[in-house]
Image 1 (cartoon, rainbow, N blue to C red):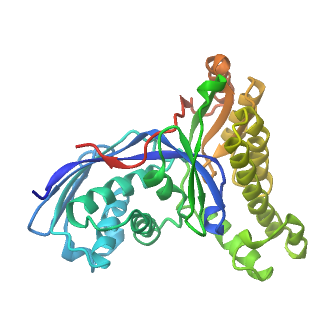
Image 2 (tube, helix red, strand yellow):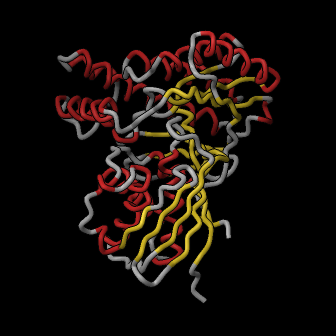
Length: 370
């Protein structure tokens, strides 16, 4: 019997390394978080779409599938453009969506750089797939959800977030070559080595729709064009960037090239079964590159990283696109509580918002709950 209702869940993610490489056809190494978005959905036969979110109480969106094809998307609340974009993209690709009631709830902090938007779009996408389009592949779901963000929500993301939400597995990092789509699940058992991965949500808003993110993408594309390569991923060494006349473009390109190298080195270390402490210097180097070459850090992130390292973290870096959001810190379990307090004190002493600090455990990708 065809299912007409159910509950689906998709996780947020934290990117261990590989920032701003996905839209340059590079490499990324994320893990799924135990935090996620739950989509409770019920199919209906009348073409009506009714959406509610616990994070936007009292803001019910009522429309129809027919209206989506001609909709002025700015008329919809910003949060609803993500799920509505998913539905519209399914329809645009030839899948009939007869109508839906959708209720959403999320435990992923919004604006923390932990991909709350991908958790939202992917939870809705697997619900729509299961209810109306069971033949749609995971690769298609990644493309549908990225298109929903790019086209309908107006956020120019790459494929990192959606791939992590849909493909990650418990206890593993996801190594992804964003050009080829090749994936590998790399074991990441920190507890066995007495380690933990702290995530510090600084509370500093991180808004991908701000112009800075789009500017970084444009700068990377310009640098690649001036170096006569399809993307910056195609440059074999950082020495190639000396041909760029603009120092800003040289810095942007250097970050992408060296960040790709860091992803590959960390993946190699972890594949070999090395103590994860050996990857820590690459994490901190990635932060320095994001701060100095890509210029996407912010004072709360700098304060949190410095405090984490002072408190004994082996490595620390901002995670996500930057401009605010979160950092991660690789630290011995026995030091985690004291380090968390040190980070909290450092941020509040400078007048920043008290952070939300938690441990990242590699978790499952999107799936049906019932």
